[in-house]
Image 1 (cartoon, rainbow, N blue to C red):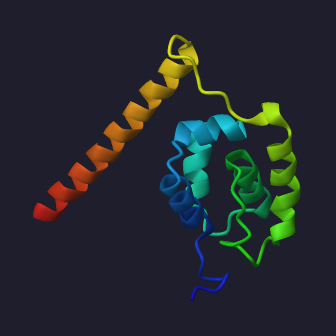
Image 2: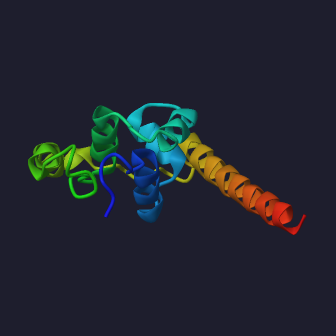
Length: 128
């Protein structure tokens, strides 16, 4: 079991985000930061609790299970419980004819392409 001193907060956050199927673009839009900031967060071993909380609220995810040293269940319950009750707060799917839909789709394709390139470079470097 990892202690809080050897836990890499950014990597743990990234795992959860990817496991739950969120794109970097979507998280950036929900947290109102640019995509570069998201990648910087993933690289930080000791991410500020405020940032983790902000991500949890945006994704409606309770991080108290992953980071019991930072949060209690009550911390997220107050925020997430409130947002569940306010019917209009749920994210509406983007219309296919909207520019935001196509922008998000384009960015997701670029991210996938980038991931494939990185994997190919790693694969090629192992051969050398």
